[in-house]
Amino acid sequence: MEIMLNVEVRAEKGSKKDLSTLRAAFRIPAVVYGGKKPPIKVALSEKELTAARKKGGVNAILRLKHAKGEETVIVKELQRDPVTDRPVHADFQRISLTNKIEAKVPLSIVGEAPGVKTSGGMMSIDLRELRIKALPAAIPQHIDVDVSHLELHQNLYVKDLRLPEGVELLDSPDHVIIRITVAKVEEVAAPAAAVPVEGAEAVQPESASTKGKKDDEGKLVKDAPKPGAPAAGDKKEPAKKEGK
Image (cartoon, rainbow, N blue to C red):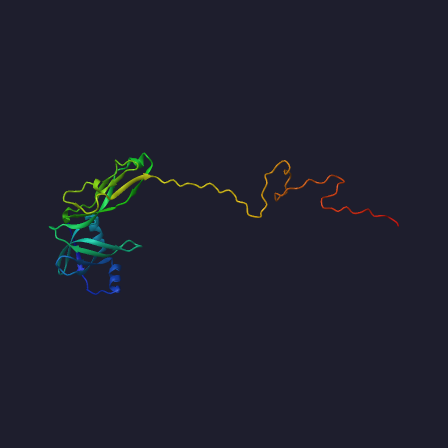
């Protein structure tokens, strides 16, 4: 299926202001190259290109119609704004419907892995798209990856996929796509024992000899002296003699 898009040919040397004006009007600057023709610069509707890729997939066959003729192409690269994710530039590659071309096809996860559902594992995705070679009309929109048989500690490889007829694999057959691994559990470290600072007094455990009342700040209050006994630290003054 080919999707028709109207494009306009733009000047070979466009300024930054011209490009900004195009994008402000929701039009995408693009270049068409390949085949036996020289490259040309075009511009097209952002909305129409987005709708075409939604309908036909990322490898949709597009027929670009402009004042100088028509071009049969695929989107080779689409640059997006890192903040808004809006497309800001497109590269279109001319193709022949009778010649095989290389393309990247998205991988789509199908099913639920028992190793995750019943064994508490986690699924790790190593590969999200597959490099293939096929006639433009035979390129699939996506390739299914069935994980419904994967148990804990099992992997699914590129060689396990079922490719449509006429699709040639370019990636290594031994490349891992999915891994079912044990879920990581964060270990909580035990609190380290307090190390006494050099020169500091070691804290002795409270015993019967050290037990006693404490003041509001937690300091030990010594027992009051017995009646008639001198307080600790008091010096005994000699008795004064009266008279001579």
